[in-house]
Structures are given as C-alpha cells and as structure tokens.
Image (tube, rainbow over all chains, first blue to last red; front, side, top):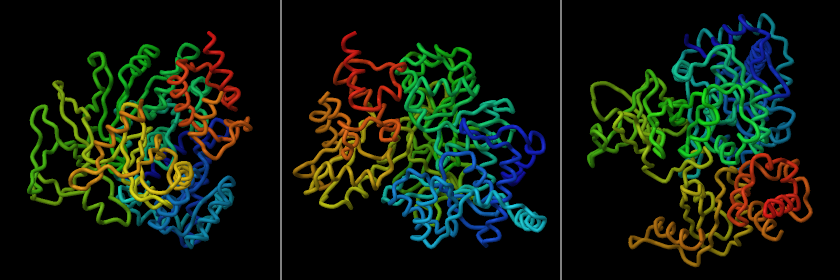
Length: 514
Length: 75
C-alpha cells in the first residue's frame, strides 16, 4: 500500500452504503465520499490545479472530508482552514502556501471569495464540484495522476503556532500517515464496528485519528458539533444516541464532563475506548472516569504534529498509584523515541536511568517538515547526533521527559516557551509578537499559569486594556487569547535587560491571583 | 447580578449583556467561555454548577445565569 486513497477504494467495494461520516444530521456513505472525492479530483485537474496545495475552508461537515480526499485524487495536498480562524492568521497561512483554489461551502462562500480575491486564488463551492459527473476521460486523467504519485508526496499541510508570529505549516506524506494509522489502529484495537465521536477540529492533525481509520476499516465517524462541547449532558446524550464507542479527545473536553458531575445524570452507555492526549489528565478526574466506566479502556497519547500524529501511548492500568501523573508510556510500533542529553558542542548522548533528556523521535512517522520554511525545518529536524554513518533525521520535540521505575516515559516540562493550553499547542512568542504589533503597545510579555490553565499577558504603553483585548480577539485564534491582561507602567526586566518572566509570574501570583 | 455582568464583560467587552438574551443561540458564548464562567462563578459565589444545570437555557442571558446562581445559593 502506498496511497491513503487505497483505504477508501477497498472499503467502498465492501460497504458502499454504510455511513462513513456524519455530523448527527447529515450523513455521507462510503459510496458518496468516494464519488464526491473523485469529482473534486477531476474538477481540480480540469482547472489545472492538480499537484499543488488546495485550501479547504468549510464548516465542520462530512463534505469537508470528501474534499480532502478529492485534493489527494488530484495529486495535491489539502490545507484545511477553519471558518473561525481570525483574518490575520488565515492571511499568513495563505501567504505561505499560495493556493490556486479555495474549496468552500454555502456557509463560507463569502469569506472564501474575499480571501481568494486577496490572494489571487479562485473560490469554488464544493457542491458545484460534487455535481460533476465523472466521465471516462476524467477517470483516465485521475489514473494518470495516480500512476505518478509516490508515497513520499505530501497530502496535507496543517498549521501550528510559530514563535516568530508566523504559523508553521507541517507537511505530511502518504507514507507517514499510513504508518501512523496502522500503528494507532492496532494499538487501540479499532475495527469495522468502531463508532468514533470526533472532537478535534478538521484543521488539526488530531482529526486523523478518526478520519483515516474510518476509511481503513469501514467504520463510522461522527463529527460532533462544537456547540455540544458546551453542555456536558447534551454531549453524553449525543454519544448515546449514536452509539459512539470510541473517543480520542483533548483532556479539557473529558474533564468538563467529569468535573461537573455529569455521570450523576447520564453515563455514556457504549464507550469502550477513551483516548486522551495533548495535556496532562488530572489523576483525580481520570479516577472519576474510570469509576463511572469500569468496562472501558483508557489510553494516554502523546505526540507532536511534526511526527504526523501521536508517537507514544500508555494504556491506563491499576499500577498507577494515587495521584501519580499518567505516563506517556512507550512509542508506537515502528517509531523510536530517544531521550537525549545535549552537550555544549552540539553532540548528544542518551539519558541514563531516570535522567531527564529531550524527547527526540525517529522513524517513518516523521513528516516532511515545515512548508516553505527551510530554516525552521533545519532547526527541528536534525541528523541523529548519535552517529554520522548515514543520513538519518530525528525530530527534536523540545519536550523534556524521563523514564520511571517501570521503564515508561514520563513528561517533565518544556525546553522553551511553548505551552499546551485547552488542548492546543501555543508559542507564547506568537501571542507576544501579535500583541506587540497592536496600536499603542510598547512592550509585552506572556507567562502561563499551568495550575489554573491561564495565559497571563503583561504590557506597557498607552493602549487601553479594553480596546487592546478587542483588537487581539480579531487577530488571535480563540484558544490563544490571554485569560488575564495586566497593564504595567514599566516592563519588569532582569539584570541583563531581558524581560523577567519569573518576576512577572510571581507578581501575577501575588496580585492578580489574590 | 453586577458580578455576573462583570464576569461576562471580561469575556466579551463588545457585547451588551444587559440586553442580550441569546448568548448561546447566537454563538456569542463558546465552550471556553462556559468553562471559564463556571470556574469564576465557583470562586465568586462558592456554588458548583453541576452538569444538569449547564444547559443553553440557563446560559442564554445574564439574567438567567444570575437566577441560576441565586437558586444555587439559596439551596
């Protein structure tokens, strides 16, 4: 197998009429996904837009996924863009990828047209593409593309936070996605009877966990509408109504259910697999979940976007002592994780027993790097420092970890100013960069209160706090907005003249946090 | 009630919370806001809003949030 479309093509012959993707209201069967994807592929080839990046800007709807596959049919790579992403961010993304076509739907048409005008692209409604009858000539054209496709061709670009204020687009190929999906599926025991309840937005690599195993097995994935995550009882009722048995969610979505006493009112009846990741699951909350669902298996997943999806897993068992942080466990099959201790000279050695080191990943799941950004790619994807016998890239995650007595990996901290907040990976530097460019702002500094999960933002200048907050709301994604904003008369500096993050954090603890 | 208005205006400066009665239906409040509000209300009023009370109806206006909080404080 060398192309992700082979999953879809083999499944559609087996279970054409089964529902592949649904948002609870509208469904698409495998036959429909397959037909629509081929139509999108043929349409793009006709436009001469095959082989390059294509933006997909739609609501969270099954047809978005058919568009993704359609772009791959045309030999290109899809760039998912969320309708709720702020203007500035979408602008930066499109400046980077330079797409010729933006696929949209009725709900995003206006916005897509405006973006297309600005970036010299063309906005096309997916409904128009789906309506195309795929002719024999189209099939030949698609087949010709397929013959030339190889498994190291990129299939998507997803954007993550960048410390210089410019989002970085991680490009992944068929091979790394296939490798990841195979490893994940066997570890979490997905099969044809799996019914996924997807939480992750489609512009995130996290949604690969549901999208691809669904076509691999002929399973079904429900794209749970965002609004359901506001109301825990409604959310659990949605799971029960659709007999959802597998969820891979961010920790905050799971704790919203457990911390509000939802299980006293309603319990998920069909859940058998709960995977969580991206953040530390508070042991007390995990306990509530395990007590409420004794027959369910729980997995902690860990991994950076740069290595396609998840790289490590931990199957939760009773060996965890009370209050012990949940380990990130061990690498997936065909992935290797090394804890490296770097020397001054750029060389490195493996960490000793229990010693902390930087978590570095090697193997097929490594992505192609950052799109149009060789500099950042070279910084993060480096030659394995343990040898120079042949070219072998490893990805430096910037996460510090160690092994516990049981030989399992345990997350310790970050090397830099990257944080995990509400399940999103954020560079505090990106917030600072955007904020510093706002009117009337002189100096800025962000710190993170891990215990309360709050981004604390300090600034100096003439800008009014309220006005500045409104401006940031227009420029930053929702999850990057500071939770606490403090105006200072003067920026606190260290003796070396650098912004004093530690001092500011202590100031915040003393004053703001009461 | 003033505290509720204060908490809400910290989340969205640009909304007139005294008037608006479709905070959820119109998508003004999102899941981040709801989680934040529940936390802030727990701190300010020492009441726990449990899952069965976290409904669109109870969060559609400052008024309805306040009556929910008052009800919980009376218990």
